[in-house]
Length: 301
Image (cartoon, helix red, strand yellow):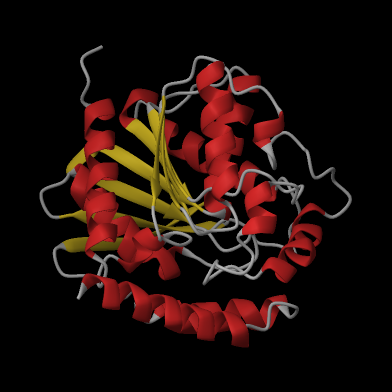
């Protein structure tokens, strides 16, 4: 039964992938918002509150009974070009609930209208917003999936490089950490990845980077120092194009003294966590993320 569910999910994903209009970013953005957004309506047992950070929209997500002194600052995925807190509300809600804390999801600036490092700048602004509103760095954790995972790790590196406070820890779901397109998985998994379109990556990278180097430190952090980053937990699917982004990051970060935990899920795809409503393994993975956040945020100093 579980195998049939996974098969059907992958079948639907391949159908969507084959019909995706990835060359038209604005159309892709509207389509993603329509397709995914209506499946991420507010859930019972949570409080949702819109807010603004400067000119950036954001949303507070507070599970019933959550510890409101601790917060997950979350960066949504979408290739730096699509997505919003609206498309990721359900996933963020589940992780926050499992951790017993509140979350802040930001609507960072998207490409091609806004080039690198606009999302990093917005992430830093959101972190400083929290610090300015009474949250301590040790009570904040970062989270992000796909491109949002890249924003996550890139922002950690930026904060470290500029001698700014760092959050207590971070979780990254299928993070996009290498914009050079040189990994083995990007080549080898092109025909088995049911979600990501191999041919779309060069265009979307160009839209995001503009004239910036594909090895820029906060866009492709795996080519730069990862020393002194806080503990990070990574979850990634075995079948995805971005598999090596996670495994390479984990190996390099561990070699540089970072506390990294990585889980590679067999037969799973890109950000499978988002399918928690139909896949038990996704619910299990999200619970592990919550447990990790709890273990870090409530650890004795």
